[in-house]
Image 1 (cartoon, rainbow, N blue to C red):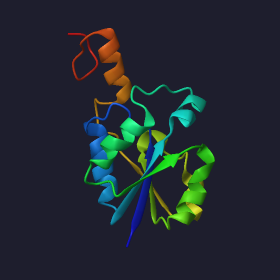
Image 2: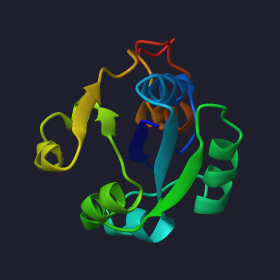
Image 3: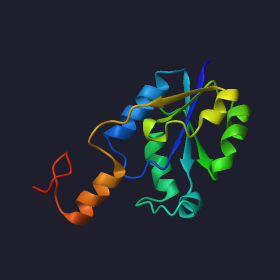
Length: 138
């Protein structure tokens, strides 16, 4: 069985997240998602709209996700790869090169981001008024 892992906050779930999870699952047989905890997000100066338990519930409902583990720190990735016998580590290409040090433990793949969608864009649209899919005000 080929095991794949990815990490993220997955706040305000959108089709870009679904695309990432689908493409990650296509790279193997079993997909594990390391979901950033609220405490870890605070360390990253990141504020989620939904708390960890809510984000975990909606990830559990996605058919591509086989298992969810808490992501508590940047440093846990090597331990997770060993513990869960990971074959492929996947992240969006906005992280390209940042996790190359994991190539010693497994294959590392950076997937292209889905164009014109992001949690940041959604939050800006909600807080700043309605914009089109290119981020322009209507």
